[in-house]
Length: 75
Length: 498
Image (cartoon, rainbow over all chains, first blue to last red):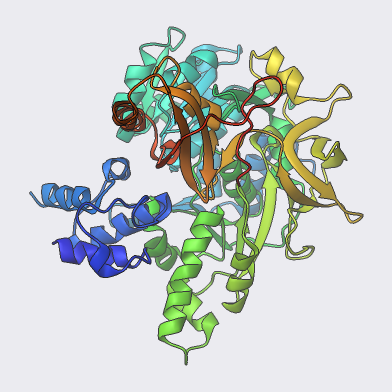
């Protein structure tokens, strides 16, 4: 799952793929902005067939947070 | 202005001209729903009539919280049509109870997605007599009033809205606008769009830029306003709704441009306009930008894809447009031509304005109202600029201490700095926006152990970030070894960053 999420995130960051880890922070480490984060999470809806609440995005600061979130949505 | 002086005039005039044509288009589950100009007027009338029946002639203050929806819009329009006062609230705000108390709110209409937040705030507001969720209580409230119109004369120059805007000192200010302020701003100029054109609304609806320029200007122009249900789904909704025009902030345009530029690099043989058509639904021709500085590269970049980007300038205090570039009249790098119902001048470098869209003042805040206007009655924008002979404005800087992010959000640096009051580890702090990243520059208390103070300050920042909306969060910290340079009156000299 991490690799799939990383693929999506790569669309929104110029960071080299091998520098991206679960601990990478979207804003500080990957240079993303709040809108990019929203778009990336929106893409996850399609990729994992889940529905994301916009307000949940505020709690996602790292890739690891997103992995956990998607897992929780998939039950 | 076609004899249109109020929000009520806009709603009634549009229903008469465009009748059963679609006005609002939105997704509901897998369905696409259209609400016509007539239906919107009828439901707005019913809400206004129900308010008058329940509360009588004395104006009530109606707060509304939620994302863009049909129910939000009829609450807004119905409140205005019945001569009451609308208080749009930011669904992301952490202090809606304070805002509602300060605005003397009597009625709260809320989207169920914010039920807990809305109701827990409502119990702290003793003046609230009625709360309605948008799911069923709102419809129950209006159902016996279907076909009825509020029978009340409107004074176009009375307050009809209180909008909260970031203050530079931290506490938000309640901008008082009249029906005339808003209606004049929405109708003062023909932007050249056509009835039946689709516009997609992506801005937060509690902002004046959205409800004046998407919701009301769209209605006045007979356009079909398509609701983007989440900022996460802009790309998908562009393909779904196929809009002709869109209003947004530079951050969104920058991201859209980056997407098509990447696609163009991958398919160099495909003409760029075709790439844009495939990405944006095929009809998109004009983007109106506001809320923050627009990098000229975005304008030239979109031009290559056959899409015009036009920059405007405004603030809630002006309902909000002060100037804008239109497809008829525009100048590169300008904020646009001053709108016809507004005058601008430059005094001591500052852009100052007056006209029929300028607010009455700040609600119950005489001091800040006084500060906002010059002695001869011009509104101080706090922005530095120039005005050319053709009445086009150009910005050169900001006189006030407000961080403007490219997503259009305004963040008070002092509000964030004040959160460290009484926290002994931080001796001095300055918060600023650095290339869109909110940065705290800190000089730690020299009497404390540096490493421990740093650790404890990092924890404090995490705790502060947890309690505030995402756009306000401190995302970078710089620790200084020396105190900040000071003025002769011992005020910190703030770093001069964008």
